[in-house]
Image (cartoon, protein in one colour):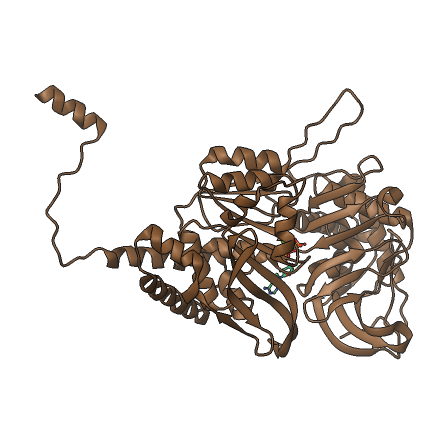
Length: 536
Ligand SMILES: Nc1ncnc2c1ncn2[C@@H]1O[C@H](COP(=O)(O)OP(=O)(O)OP(=O)(O)O)[C@@H](O)[C@H]1O
Ligand SMILES: [Mg+2]
């Protein structure tokens, strides 16, 4: 891989410093992100202090290339015409326009090899349609989160292999950081300013952006955190392969969902709650009607019968234009009118919990995530203001599963840590929980106790199936999930199709093809009845 050694770093127009790798640094790992223009080095050095550091490097521009780059950007900002078709990929469009400019002004823009032109176009695209100096981090598939705690301090990333590490990138001035945030807010179709200093938004690539503006909220000035979106979310089969849960626990949740039981996923920040909830949604039957309610849309269930509702914060500029907030509370309330089989609330934080439990009390299924580290704490929060859920309603949320980012006893897929479902507990009373599965940290395996499951007993009473029959079905599904884990399934959609196949096959085998039923005359539809009356 190349090195920037001895070459001048690019002077960033947004005053963002990208520190170069120094000669004495030890390089532990390196990989391309945008081959051949940008790559990452994981380095350490006594000069940097403890631990590993994440260093972005890019093919540097020569002064002549930099000059041409600046002129292309200037010409583009004057002559750029927006595409008429909104289906066009903006990066491709800007690239075409830049190439046209390079051709039109080729005499004055200078002579370069194709490789040198490619580097110039890389920077034009990076800065006009991408994320500027943060572009490589944003494109790096190993990065989960990017956070900035203020000016003159390195950005931090959460790396899938090396966890939380500082980068070589920092904003040098408040203006640069504020301008970056205003641009990001604009990209997500939202607004951030001193009057509205808190932002929770979604970038066009579906990355989630949380930010605070200037010193209104944080004394050190603007801050932000970007949770990167995986274009291909993890499916339940991926999660089984990663060891987050095993096939038996997945089979249990499949039975639970088929029988309209409710559950909540609890855990800390970034523990994988939303990912797990999204993956479990592929186990729903295709006939189920789902309504998802979220602040920032993250859930993407692979079902057709799905209504997606998102809350909205209003901006009111001046007294004459009062806006109207649409809260999760409003949305959960309206979702009841959609006759859902399941109401799925992305993250329960406030009074919407009260309506969700009302919904459970009227026979709807409910799924949600909650930020907490034990069921006790969740129940305490649910039963206190502003949630105010009555203690008698708590068992309506039949199951609580606790997910955590953990250190593994032995590396798996080359990683020393992972996400695991620590416990699955059935809620019998507001203060009585029955544990049916637990992760064994020493062996990195799950112990399950579904034979004693209180919820399966409830299902047995409701369906007329014996407990043995239910456990047999659980085993069949466990084997089926294991079979799917051996296949090369690429996405949630494919998993959902295999789940549908299972339902169809089971429906077929339930019908006994050998016994010929007496052919029943089908009930006449309304119109036919009228006809018969007329005949008589
Ligand atoms: N089981 C898993 N294995 C590997 N990576 C995972 C797993 N679950 C989640 N991730 C990754 O971890 C990151 C955080 O996941 P997710 O958004 O689901 O967490 P969360 O608990 O909902 O976070 P928050 O509290 O911020 O809402 C994402 O980048 C996701 O792709
Ligand atoms: Mg989440």
